[in-house]
Each structure stands twice: as C-alpha cells, then as structure tokens.
Image (cartoon, rainbow, N blue to C red; front, side, top):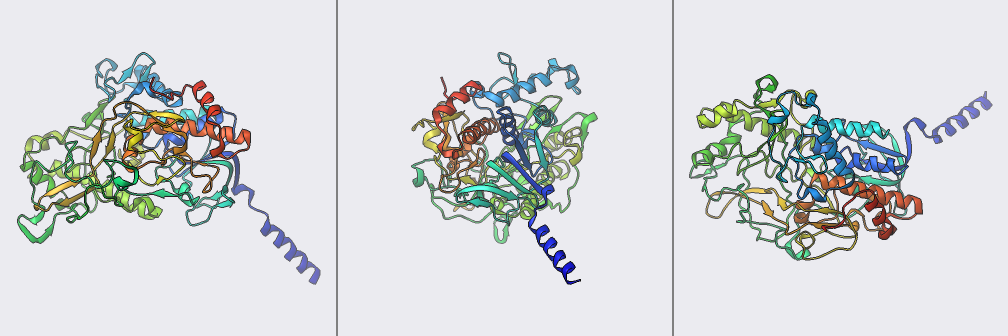
Length: 548
C-alpha cells in the first residue's frame, strides 16, 4: 500500500512538470494583434517561408481599415508599394464586379478620395471602400496563405513574459495558452506586448524642447482646421453667465500650461461611422442607454452661434454609404475622455469604448429628436442611419474604436517633426510617409476670457514625402532583441500624427516581417540585421523606399 502511494506521488509529480501541450504554441514568428498591420505582417512572413501564428484579441480582422475607415488617409498614393498596394489593388478588383454594386450603379459613383481620385487606373488601385469589403480581403489573405489565427485571445498583462536576458521566449494569454516564438511582432494599436516586454515608451505629448519641435506639446490658440470655438465665443456654464451653475458636460477646467509644454494628454478618439440614406439599407438612429440631452447642450449653443457644417465629413464610399468622421468644434471626437486608455486594464478600456459609443449614438439621436435643433439640419439628419449590411453582428455600429494614438515606443531611432518636415534625413528607409502632421484635439477647456475652446488640433502639410527609419520599429537592443513594433513605433507625438495612417502601418508591417526573416536566417538580433541586405529584399518585393 505504501509503495502504491509513493508511485502515485511520483506520477502526480511528473504530470505536474509536463506542460499541457494543447495550450502550448511554438512558431517562428508570433504576431500579436488583428489590425491591418498584423495581417500584412503575417502574409509576408508566410510568403518568406516561416511558420506564423497570429494572436488576435479581435474576432474581426483588419483594425480600422475594416471598421469604418474606408475613406483612406493615403497621402501620396504613388509611394504605397508592396503588400499594402496589393491590398488596394484587391479593393479595385472587388469593385470591378457588378455584383459588388448592390445599392448603386458602378457608373454613378463619382466620389473623390484624399488623393483626388477614388481609383488609380494606372495600377488598378482603389482608395475608397466599404468596411465589409476590406474585412473580406483580409479574410481572403488569411485563407490564401493558410495563416493560423487564434481569435479572441488576449495577452495576459498580469503574467510576466518568459525572457532569456533581453530576448522574449514566451508569453501567455488570458485563456492560459503559452505562445513561444523566435521573433515577436506587436501590431496592436495599444502596444501591450511592447510594454510587457519592458520596452521604454511614452504616452502623451512631449515638450517641444525634447526634440527641438514646434508643433508638439500644448498648442493653445493654434487654429489650423475648423475644429475650434474661437469664432463663436460660447459661454461654458450650465446657466449662461452663472459660474456657480457649473460647467456644461464635456468641458474641462482652465489649464495653466504654456504652449510647447508637454503633458499626458492624447488626441481624441471616435468611431468612424458607416452611414446611409438608402431606406432599404438604413437602421434609424435610436435612443442609447444612459442618454442625457444635457451632454449635447454645447451643440445647441453652437448652432445658435451660426455653425453649419454638421455634414462636412460624411465622405462618400461605394453603395450610397459614408465614412463619417469628426468635423467641427463639437462633433464625433469625444475630447478628453480617453486619457487613461493606453495604460488601462481591458475592463477599463471596454468602459471607455462603450462611453465613446454612447456619446456618438447620443449625438446623432439628439440632432434627430431635440426640438431646439434647426429644422433644416434635423430633417436632413433624419434621412441618415447606420448601414444595415455593415457590422451586421453589432447593429450596424463599428467594432473598433479609432485609437489614433496610445503608447509610442522610444526605440533605436525616434521619428520627429524634423524627419517629417524634411529638416532631417535618415539613412535606413523601410517605407515612406507623406500625410500631414495631423493631431486631433486633446482637450476642451475654458479660456481666461471665459469662453469654450478646444486645444491640440494640428494640421501642417509635409513639404514632400519622407522616409521612415528602420530603427523606428526596433526597440533598443538592451531592452528587447527579438521584438518589432510597426504600429506603436518610435516617434514623437506630432510626428506620429503623420505616420499613424493605415497604409503606412501596412508598409511597416511588411518591412517588419522581412527584418524578422533575416534575423531568423542569420540567427541574429533584429537590431543587428544589415540594412544593406534588408534593402535588397524590400526593393525586390516592391516596397518604395524613397520619393524619387
């Protein structure tokens, strides 16, 4: 009996030491995220002959590209190459079929894109598209390349990574899966894997003095778009003129920072809504839970002051739909309600996302129902609704909150305003950027004169396209030697305002997988990959590395 008991103890002990192989995944390249960047990185890695595993917190793939941002922030489309260009060529191909035009004739779609043309006929690329079309393309890419994806799997941020010196060996998901690989790519908007790996990063706006910039930090009384109150002189108090009545909702107190000073604020988030006036495909706006008309009192005062640009950014995409973005002083951007998001827990982030959703749903419902809204605007808004055939398992509302900015790595090379405005050059280009320095507002406050104002909105055109340095997606070697970060890359706040576009994230993702492949082949750290060798492969794959 004693021998049997000892044998049982030995067997139990051995069993405890043997991992559950069903929950252990081992691959060459691990990609964390379900964004457009993540899928392009996975496609490239598979094309280069590596085993790949995508750990996607999302069930729907493509990030913002498939979640409402169909009016592409493209910049100079001639500088989008490789797999990123292939994506937009696939969009073009989808819309060549008459069956793709369910709600309007192909010939009737005349909308212009940000690059002035919705279609580039020279290379058969299209820059405007419906959310479901983008998602279908990402799913096609996954299927064609036989990419393994674990969906609805979340990094366990409370459990330490397994590392050997400065090299990641494994991380764990909330469901208990152990993910082991040679190279890791963090392609999320939040940079959670990067943070857990101990890589240095920044949240918020740096002072202008940090990188010798002009448009970083606090930017009071800088009015470069029409997203401010300065022409309207609007009273901020619940009872006009009565300070004791308290501030209206969505307004912060007077701020004391001087222009150019750094802070921990980040530019506003919103959902990019896919709306339609087509009665056969329209879901009417309804009253959201916790709806409070007072939250939108600012809009009444704004209309009375003469604002009339409600529908300015209802940008047309195919099939009588829109990509509707923020526009104006009080619009879709939920200014000041996202400061804690980058470092928040998953539960806290969910609450922030829900608050943003309710805010936008309430904004639309308010305009369609409040008797104080100008009738011309109200009647026009009542014609609109959510597209019934988009986001069908979410009531027509987008899946992904637009995380315009979260953590930003402090890596081997830091992209700054100097790079973007052509005042400085780098020597290891892995892709091009060309979009304006574009930051949405970061705060709404009361001025010293007692009026409402927004702050943080910047829109400065780049004089020409610029290159993004290889070191901008690489951590410092002493911090992590086998991690690549193509989304939360190394950049100042204001430079990120230009870089943070979906085509650029796809470009950088392809370059990231090429770096990973060379590092695996040479058994080297990612920081030790020869740029000369990398450059040859990038050019062979159609990446565009300079503006000429």
